[in-house]
Length: 363
Image 1: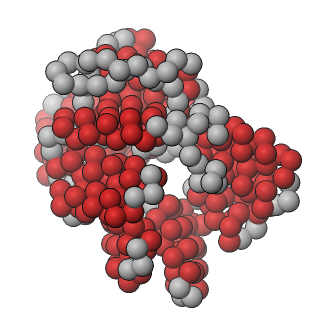
Image 2: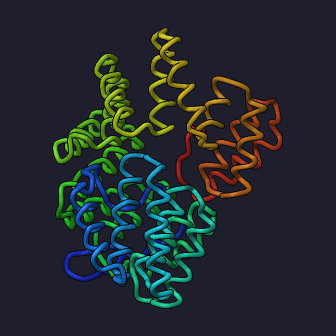
């Protein structure tokens, strides 16, 4: 793989090609697409049912609400709208990209990769399709393909979506200074409050990874100044408050985050905090919600540390078969170590560290 190269992209921009992997790397805060936009679009389509462009737009609105709220019940509506658009025009690029992004949201990364590839076959200049391809490729462990996708995306569009993905690549390599530079470029490019919140949250995560807890807390609060309901920033503020010893404030932040978006990661973090302060019954309530959510990676992490490490290994082996990311390798290596299988654990630890970045269990 080639190293990152600095180059000018448009006016005052940064960055170029890459080498490594994903997370939720799209722009956005938590400001929801207004319900009236959904209603207006649906009303328009009742009068103009043959408008494939608007069917794809309706799918995007539903998919955005899935990403923001975690309401998986809306995903079939998004998929139905995208597929209706394709029924009207099999070459509808917006619908193909939308189906790819929706598949990634569902952690169906092989499908996300396939939809993005199909979109790019029809339109090699579609930046958003490269973003979907990048997101899928890094989760599948296809780092060379992710590198090339990001290079194309940066060539086509210097904006929040491309800069934050470039930052993700730097983070995975442990290059936090460069990651923060990319995130600052993203922040400069941000226009709406949702993008501002997203960029500040990502900067908070970068500060957290660098061990700067007060700096992380400042960035999380700036994200919340832009969007007070942004669940990821609420949870970030919670972990920073906990690290600084303000446990009650931390629990309040986590409670607000979980009420907004019951993410398995938030549930695990809040449950572990409750355990630490001896509130075991409340912790178990959070862990029960985590088990019900069915996210194999987070559940495997929970089982490795608080439940049955052997069960964790089984869960994470299944996840590894679906996506060979450094995060899954790290979690599986840790679960194997906890289950007494140190030799095999070392293999996955090496896989987790192959990009050079810091993982949960690398220190």
